[in-house]
Length: 605
Image (spheres, rainbow, N blue to C red):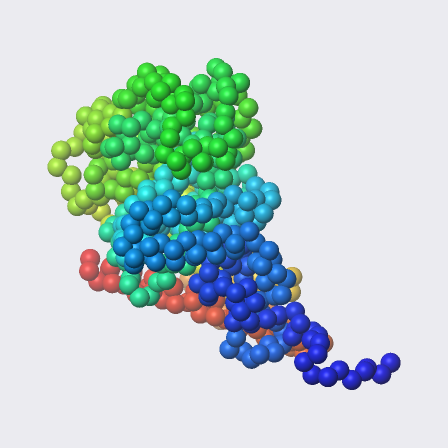
């Protein structure tokens, strides 16, 4: 069928009709560019990449349906009303009318993001999958200083700190922490909540210096506004899943001493005991609790809860620190990982010196069943307690020592957590250089290089679980045919060559050993000289020449496979080979660095 002629500009089709540029979207919505950015962040609208960019490659494109989605958003009218009130306030101040300006400030329309969070995350699993960036952003702002020029208010910082401590207290309560890694950027944590892995980054407890021109804090504060509401809803759901009321009411004395995490643990312990005694106690809805907390008013039963905190849990009870109620009614059955993590530090008692990262260790140690205290007011027990098994110290030397405990560096705790066993403390004693801190997020087998300390940890794990490991240097490829493993894709070509070389050497050694046994049986000596030795060497050379060349066989097989491939598959195969070569180059570089390091250590010794 012949297509009718369409005059230009009358009707658009294809990408021209489905996508518009950012300037067109701003003009269509009749808003400013900062307000458009804020709406897109709040509603979760992101730019698109059309196959054909009609206006050019230097434009940012949005889908027409996304722009229509923003056009019908009720927040758009609220932002317009707020802008009108700001103009009225500015006009009243310019006319020297402070009473009118104050009256207008009290009438500025307000809004909440509860409805938007419910729209973006209809199920709780969807919210858990999006918690990585949320937790990282909240923990970042919890460590930042308050600055008026960047609109970082003190209440905002305190709210982020409260939300982060509530999340950490829940993870410690249910023992769901799985991995910890300390890097230059900060401390990486990974927890498993309701089958979803949540990974976040917390900055080090150091003085943060804010850049002036490199970071747009308006955009970050808009993201933080969404993440605060999202984390509040997530904490509310998680706390109610373990029969604990939310928001928590903390002991004001511990809160004044900056022991929020300890105060949260005491609150959860007391509330868990109360919920077991009286499970039908009246509770507030989530929106009402959040609204009550934002207004700064306490519920009617705050005095009762504070009394329970004061009298049910003594302040100096060692078990109160992060050792929460274990047999709570309505708890789901724990999986194997949770039971293993729960018993790792069960029989250990820690004390933290003042120079170690206190908040991180107060979060990690109780999450794996340990009891911990610190140096300062509000601590559950003092340094002179004779039941302390380990004291965490991060200084060159320790003056006064108790013989009943071990003094280790903080890295020992994190390495034990990642290995899931209690590692020996000889390498982590005070004043010694600790072993390398290995990342639990790296699969050494997939990378092709296993560090030496990782092998040591693997042997310790096998000894703990009464397992038998193969001899070092002997693997599956040493016992099976390397050519068959290469064809099946079990090993790559470099590994096949190494396996073939090892197998050839093992075969030669085996043949030499058999020849020596035969000579001993015949009454001859293996070290005698004469034609027998020459004959034996000739036989070994003949056997060596008769063995197939694994490199040539692998090369022939690869060439035959590439012949029957299509062009796209051949290019994909070549790209995979380039990636394998690059990975092997990295492995060789690591091995070379290891050799140089060992040579330097031998030279120094």
